[in-house]
Image (cartoon, rainbow, N blue to C red; front, top):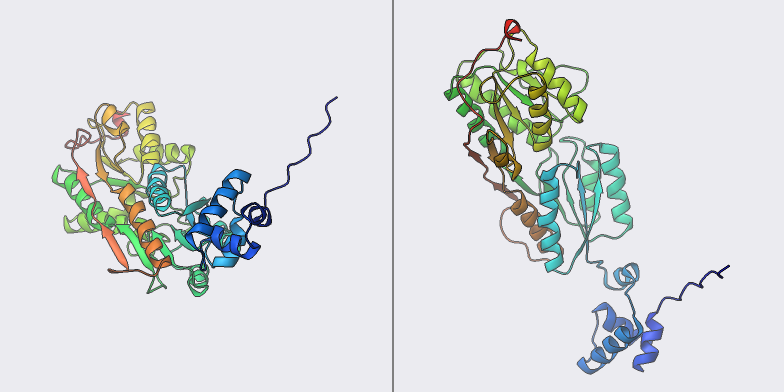
Length: 363
């Protein structure tokens, strides 16, 4: 029977100082990148650290320098490819600037977001990038700002923080363009499906929604339909499609209405895949039976038949901009307006056609 291997003792600053033949305080300043240290001493300390396999203790370094070189990112659903691509932009930018990134996924739950913010403060992150779960419940975000840590909001803005940096897409304008495109092709019964939980009360036009990006999309769609004279345009809005079964159920319910929608706009690519799968199960085809538009432009949207008309968002660039702004805040070199809005574009492909009315007699 093998004896358990004794755990190797971590190399300390004192070990590096002894190897480099300098005082412990001098080695700490050199390794931490603060204070006055000559080039000769810094090279000796670095050589000793490499020879011994020394790895800096991030917490100790942050206590000495006041900086951890770490960014905390809190998003609602990392399974959503939108946030995955935005995270790539954030991490690429942070790495190039010498920062590490730690991530928390909240499932769009406010309590989880609050807990993540608390944990990140305890871990002494230098700043936060947050995709907030609530438009109005923002006390924890105020607490972040009052702690002296910079905060950048990703993809969404909130009601009660006037001075916070926001990086987002012009959702209302592009949603209006998508709805107008469908209207121009003859559609009046246009559905919009989103993951946002609405609660027990049905949506009525003008209601405040909990996430700003969803509110903007709904406002853009309804504005286009109202201008076109479409009555009761909100009746085809569907909320809470936040699981595969939920998306399928919503799609089936919509398409079995006496007057089903003739076009569907999916709020993200995960919803889109669920909708398309359920339409196929129902024996309906795009665009002959139902026209279809998806938010986000991922490669698979051009690989299926028909290729999907999409709303292309500069997701990677949004992540880059969020990290760039946060690092500038951390390092005290901010310029420009606090709110940066990226344009999105409607990309026309093959999934939109004039409507064919589908009723119960056709099922």
